[in-house]
Length: 428
Image (cartoon, rainbow, N blue to C red):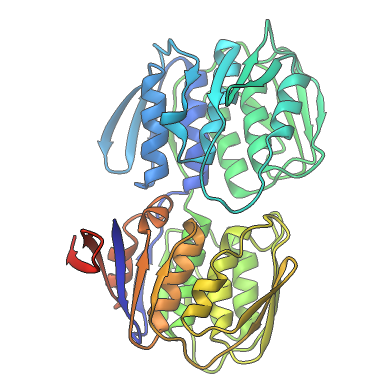
């Protein structure tokens, strides 16, 4: 097992470039299967979730070629399987996007129920509702989601709850359906728009992505394309909070400021200085920060994927802050780990009551999930003494070269491997 060893107290300074959006890539790569052609996709993040997904796609008959670390050629001409077993996708939630792409292309898909971070219940009932409305038969048997259709026909679908996954999945299935499909109460996240733009670049007719109503005119075929994935909103936000928590001065580059508005607004409310440029944001601190209240909401609200990182920042901000989680009910599993470092946080229902402390201290802590792991790293950057963050494999699922980028900003962080479980470490 690998860990991060962090010695806190360094103010981060300099610039850091954001990688491609993991959540967009997890939708775009399966969508390439719909084309029966060759797609070249740029700005693909080099993270473990993407590697796992590509392995599953290769098993379906997709030919994957890396042109460089961040550019991938997807040849989907010879897809000959419709079954994705548990071994391929047990580690990632987004495996379910192969349902929409395979159903759209082959009119059949059998995908194991997905895994991923344990941050709360994430039902697939809205996915099933959408597939069935398009004319598919759906069943859950022996841990597999099975979908079949003689043909897919456009229809009107109202999602009972806003679901990013269902919006992407049903959108993919609908682009090759006969007639017009309307998705109401659709999710509006930036990666929804990116997947829609990718589909359109292949010849689909998708309008309204980024609003709560998406209209899809089915087409007969899709063609190959060259496409560049948008920057990662959550990675960008994490580095913005890293600058704030260390009292530093960091310019985060290769981002879209519009996507960062909810995060920037809350940091500004705390007293963090924010300077926007065309594709960059400078974040710096020149005085004490203020306590605030935050509630996670679907986009364009404050993202649930930034909740742990912001909680880490509020834990060392003077005064009483409240973090309310409205998306995932089990997303506070990391609170005990922050408290182990000296934070003063209590849970009341779906809210964390945070009494800011002047200083947290280094400790051995364990990442319970991807974003919580990032939050523990942020706390370690400002802690007195040495922090060891265990289970960095969670962090590797969504952050590309995290320790390298933080080192470039002046952080004292190293990845190590524990030997024989005896607390002995060596650098990786």
